[in-house]
Amino acid sequence: MIEISNLEFQYGDADFRLRIPQLSVAVGEKVAIVGPSGSGKTTLLMLIAGVQVAERGAIRVGDRSVAKMDDAERRSFRISNIGFVFQEFELLDYLTVRENILLPFLINDDLKIDANVQAAADQLAESMGIAGKLSRHPKRLSQGERQRAAICRALITRPRVLLADEPTGSLDPVATDQIVQLLLVRASEIHATVLLVTHDHRLLGQFDRTIDLVECQAAGAPAEAS
Amino acid sequence: MSGTFRLARRYIGYHRVRTAILLACIALTIYLPVATRLGINQFQRRAIRRAQSTPLVIGAKGSRFGLVIHALHFRGDPPEAITMAEVDGVDESGLAEAIPLLARFQARGHTIAGTTARYYEFRQLSIARGGPLKRLGDCVLGARVARVLGLGPGDRLLSEPENVFDLTGPSPLNMSVVGVLNPARSADDDAVFTDLRTTWLIQGIGHGHDPLSGETDSDDQQHQHKASKANLVQSAEVNDENLHTFHFHGEPDTFPLTAIIALPRDEKSETLLMGQYLSQETAAQALKPVDVVGELMEIVLRVRRLFDIGTVLMGLVTALLVALVMLLSLRLRSAEMEMMFKLGCSRTTILRIQAAELGLVLAVSMMIAAVFLIGTAAILPSLIDRLIG
Image (cartoon, rainbow over the protein chains, first blue to last red):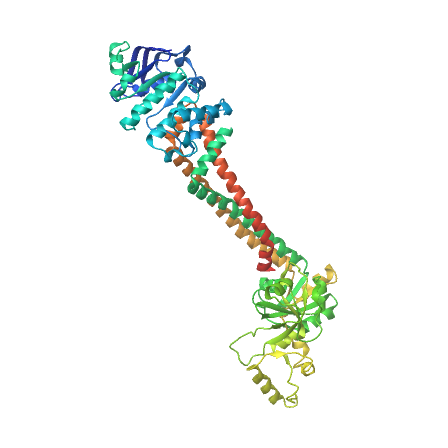
């Protein structure tokens, strides 16, 4: 599903350079990515999503080579294939929870909101336990509820890959367990591949595999864990 | 596009205070110059229309603007007096018809314009209620005076003394309202009309006697004494009993006027008449109101040009402020924009959302300004009427 080979990337003149000789993630696989701060975890997610462009090497998601796409193609690719969950939720205060969940449809002219999409949003909200909060604004939700809404937003387009960048970093341990559990279950329902960056080693048991990015870069081969 | 506008609408709706301040700034920037321009244009039209309909004005030498404004709009300090002899001079010249005007007194804040019946014909004034002036002491009210004071035929209106501290001055005259004019949308709506003799009575040139006192004019010294004494205690009033006792002292030729409206027979007569008043020796001047008002409008236009420059500067400042607000807003919302980009939103769409927000604010500002301008345009004629008549 995701194939990375000889990947190299550097932010401008920064000292750090991300080098991943080889990395593979299978369809529907749930992978946790760990590593110290600055080891390139978030950068890797951005490269897979096509938000950043690799200097060298190849990234394939399914049958498509991200590195060879132009800007418009990468954007279109993200809309159809990638779901994002961020550490700080990044919900828009001025929209209701329902509108936040439907945001990918509001910001892309290619996507239209119809009755099916509305029903999918209701269903997702129901399954994430926030069905009663759809008409509220994010400021009136708890941290856990906000992250649930953010996960709904990531899943509403039924992406093939779900990229989560420390999605539980702002949550307490109880909420963390619940959120990760929900995220993995919902992703499984749509057979999405999950790459989740975390510092919380308690969570690793819930994943099919863990990639330590430091080891991955040093060994030149995908690290095996758990 | 609908998603773009939905997001823009939600954003500006959520940030109500910020949006309201922006709306007010932009709406005011649009409203003020347009409203001022509307007002000035209306003022110009109204002033020029009145001036164009008045061929010549004759009055004492002095301020040209003052004389024309006084004769046309009954505004400002009355000019120095001329005499009835000037009217006779114009009539005898055969060059023009003279309409005398004495407009130096007030009644409850409205100018009392003493004139002849020809004035009503010349200005095409008609009676709406009651009837025309019949006798000494009668007055006919302009439409706005009647409305503002709540007076009509059968009511009384007291003239104001020129100087309230001058106890030896003439008594206020308690005039009888006999009619109300139809609205003329001019200075005539704000005036109280009497005949010339009534205004001379107010000035103290004429007076009457209490028929029961038996006083006569045989002893002039005693007569003057009693007339002055009466001023201390009461106002004068003309009624059926004392009408026959009213009389005037002095030669009618010397009775005062504040202006004469002259209606030349033709263009040549107008030129000849004006020529007569060009001499340094004459105490009066003849003016073409359209020329004088034209000069006045030149000054107004110059002021308007200055105002226009101010408006452009204000517009620039507002545009810069709006740009600053938008730039600061963009900086504050950079994380939001980046998140949208990561979700697959194009940079163009992000710009479109920003443009839609600005467009909506501008559109609503213009609507607010338009509503206020429509309101202003509706009340402007009456405001201008009050300003210049």
